[in-house]
Length: 135
Image (tube, rainbow, N blue to C red; front, side, top):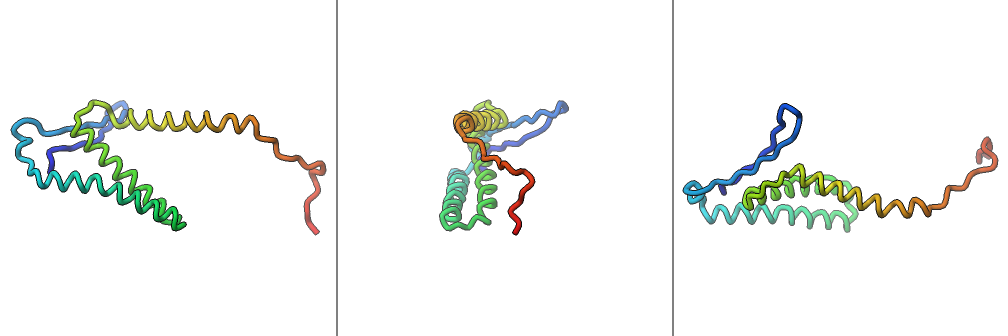
């Protein structure tokens, strides 16, 4: 529709490769600007709509729908990211970017949790190990 496509393939070594392509030159002129505008608007508005539904579900305490909404946010976000990579034309791979983001997230979580683990008091121990609270 807008002359962009992206996909993933696994090579013989088991490594994941992401490919981002865009039409260039004369072929790019065949793209209808109105269709391209509708495409990009829908591509950006869908994740925003899912985030709004996530907030409604979170504040409305409808936790059973949050998993579905989270999956939709991730999938729509990945699709948006893939098409933006095609449009911009960066050679950075999606898998490398996602790995870096997850590594940074876990690193921050460990750094935040280590001080609290060191200062946390140990749980109280019972002096009578065989006694239960049965009447």
